[in-house]
Length: 529
Image (cartoon, rainbow, N blue to C red; front, side, top):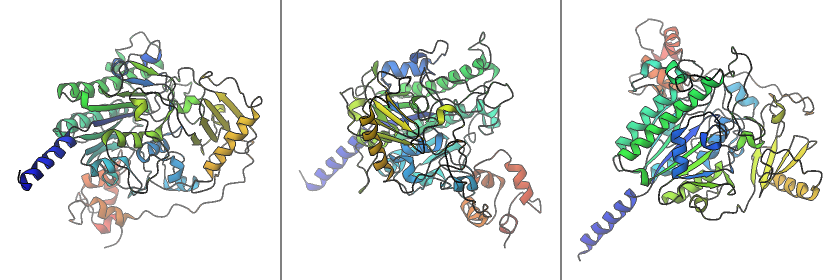
């Protein structure tokens, strides 16, 4: 055979091999508690599509996220690192608040990132839904700078999730009671279009849904699923079932395109359920999710704040109908595990805080050889929010506060509700686990410092240092970034696409538009010629 023909055969073989790599669909819910599934013994919820995933895949009961709130939890997923390594300790907010917390305004797009590695390896990549890997900075990097070919988001910069969808008229943000009922539906519209357009090319897709973050809302049509349920449960249950329906639409498309068997699907949540409020006028009134009996909720290092649903389906690779109650998995494991599943090497010099847990996915016995660590620098507004650090080693979790005045130890395999504190009876284990936690803390880029937003009266913390006021935004940088056609004029569309919060974009645009010509010049927007 001639060398040229041999080369063509080899290239053809490589192309075929690349085309058979699994698609990745990562569905990440928001504040969805471990108990918010019919298959997790919820007595009223209807989640038929997630129940289907469990029947066709494996339900991991010992999975925990990297942090009990949104932004750091998501940072752990996309970097494979504990979020403190990137200075992400709480949710991204405005500049002044981020500074007070010792945080940047966004996750550094130069960090090791799962979507970028997927893209470099030939995957087509997309992110639809919640972003929240940046705060309120005018010139926050767009999702494309993180390795996504396509994106439409809320709580982030760039294209709104409602744009280019059949429900574009429902536009609004997550705190708009009407729009909140349609955010996940809009994200799903993009996801369906993206999957169809992939056209046999392997894809990596984040579908990061709204439910059940506040505001929890539901339409009259949604509520028909629960006609005899009283509020606030009726709205909450209806929102859950609406989200489940959208997930079902994606699963049905995989079936239609006959790519179900070659798609690895993960469903999980960024942290435990929000704390609810008793009055109908309060924003958390409808946030009545359940931890399934686990102690603590969002913002807590007890299991109720970090132990969330984790369902994996990959026909022919992940056992169907299996419940895994012993494999100890973490959010930082997602990065190395998906690289292993797709055959993509890690970047040179990269070290993950997580593990390749693909053997556990495939049903093999799995014993975690290293501890899992947590750090919480946020407020302690609820009693269960008191721990600032925690470590899991085997079946034991140790928690302590800033001063180590309060210490609790639990055997969480025997005591999932964390009711039997073993600290007094196992001092040697406490000392050994604390030493490992201290060693881990010493590897972090900055020393621990309680957030100024903390409210513990016994924390013994000095008054927070005063920070400089937020500097004036650099609108010149934003103008250059948003001016996509380089005509030195911003249209309303370009201006809106660049904003992280878009709900009052037309009004803000009009304030800049001094000559009312429908376009912003550099002098109008930046203040200089």
